[in-house]
Image (cartoon, rainbow, N blue to C red; front, side):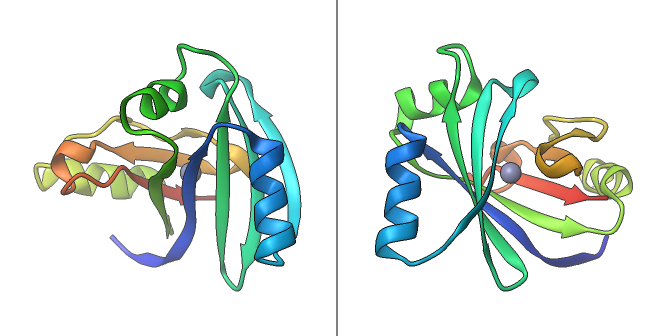
Length: 133
Ligand code: ZN
């Protein structure tokens, strides 16, 4: 497995518009895209900082994993995404090392990238995403 950099940090928010305002007006970052990801029931907003990004996630459905996360833990840090060269191979490698996966195979995520999640029970409590082309 080869991790190239932190692709993005995912943050669960209750109100995307209000959060975008904080990142833009207080931190001076620029939201370069927003996207609804229907199958994950989320609306996302992205900010670039060097070769990494911040991904804000607002739930569009009370049954989504983001809604459940906020209900349980409140808004805040949600996941860390590592840029890997081959998402499927990296998932396979993690599984072979005994890591519990949320995704056995990659699926399509935001920005047209392939993504796959490792289960936080196997990663010291950090929801971990592999992300790549
Ligand atoms: Zn993500």
